[in-house]
Length: 525
Image 1 (cartoon, rainbow, N blue to C red):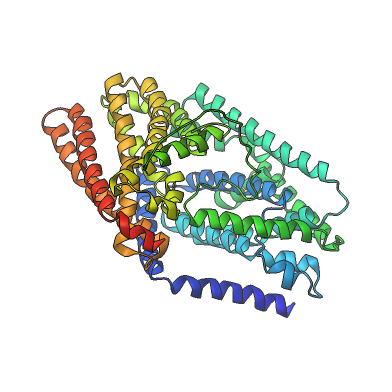
Image 2 (image 1 turned 30 degrees about the horizontal axis):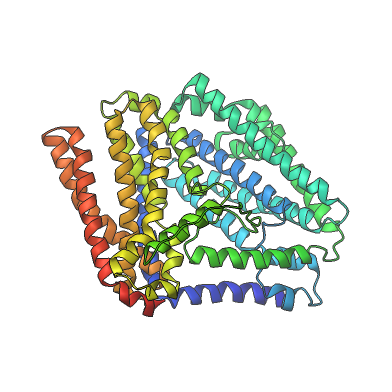
């Protein structure tokens, strides 16, 4: 027991020390601190303006978080991917003469820390923003950090150490939760489509008695309502059911027999988690742990090219072997985000006379969201043969990124056309928005090369991304201010051609600078 406590504490301390040794950590702490203060200030201002700064507003936020965290934890634990095991665990921890159940409980310390931090944030927001009495928020913290943690640990132990339930049952349980999530999402879409998306309809949904009657997660929400708004017959009964459920789950988990059958799945998870971190550090888009092995298509054809042009055709062949060609997870996210925003904001955009600016703003936001995602061109920069091709640096950089420009153009179509069509934006402005998205993606790639040449490995990849983002935001921001001035003084539609031509010029300059410094990239890689 003491050995596990020491291991857990030293893991936390070593993670902090390792982070503080990196020069970029201080920059990240400052930026994240400023951003967190800004977000809290804006959220407080927003809920005040919407007259949502009461216990009812806090209940709405807590309900959303409770539903999300409960179902996501249940999915993760049922698939045995909710506890982070390192590659050292199978070699040093699992063979130790310690109860497998204790090892599991101590390995999930990051989950407990997340729950405590979120509860503290809710307490702070409840006292400062939502004007809830401190004694009520103290009770809220106790429920969140004791009852919820007890239930989470009990569910975790049950899912990991239950050696009697067949694997098919666990997969069926996970599928049932996914079906429930899909049904709930469909219900929300139909509800807000019929009632309209407004503050009144949102409040009416979270005040719906049926929400508190949902087993376990609804009973948890009822306990919060009992603390924050006072007792009713419904929330008192549901709170009692919740307390009994937690007690029963805790006793069941405590008395369960565990011989360490989950060790094999935990060892595989440790390898998958290490591979996921490696991909994330290289800038690849990863949506899960232990992703299925990709299947490739059989292709035919003959491509012949010389010089740097061969790099482009090689990337084209690689994309043709992919199951969905150039359509990736980023394309799906763009499509889903565009469809959701198009219909969710249709009424609000319709009340304004500038829907094209909403389209431009959403495009800029999605560009920022995908700013850290790289494509196949990033792997080209790590390949030594690219620097040995007998061609000019400009052509090498151009053909190494050309396929990504094509992909960015297609993603721009998927993102901009649904929103523009639903909001009634003219086809010409939609086309310019697509081109702006494509050019900004190209600007991101070339600015990344320049940032890597400026800072090298001193700040690491994260530091390079921060420098690249700040440099890109500063340069594009100048053009954005000029376009805004022209839109205000002359005509709003002038914003699009000004931003487009300015972005093209800036991207061409960044591409030229990147090609000049291209020869030094081989030494850095």
